[in-house]
Image (cartoon, rainbow, N blue to C red; front, side):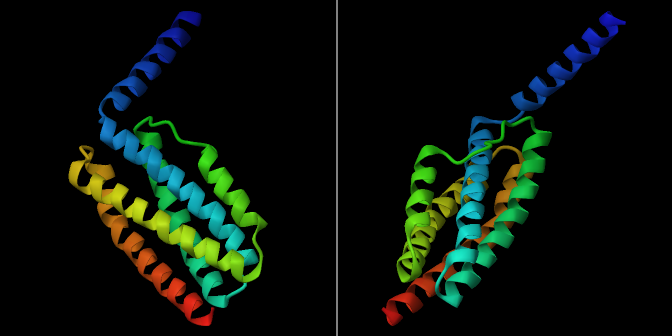
Length: 169
């Protein structure tokens, strides 16, 4: 019985390694970075939904939260099917930024959240555009291609919200 269990366990490990070997470095790096970005956007947006001063910022945060949760769920399924390691917590820089955001109040909170969101959206757009061009895995490339319009939309509504805040200030 132990031999059978050992053989089954080895076969499972070999299958995982084979799946992981089929994923290029670009695909792996994209998936891990996109998952970290989704995690960051969800955490920041959850805070903003509850703490933002401006209704426009609350609306932006809710849109970001809804869309990034959906994207994260789908990408996690793809990552799991490809045996790609998924991040479980924010990286050190994102934790520092989250602490700064948490310490803000009122209009200062709104400005920091929208400025941070705009800056991060540019990085995320570049990440997804690179995957649409250089990704080797068909499913991950399709995910990036299909998600990119939503990310561009986020960038546009973030820019509009930043402009609204500047007009008020």
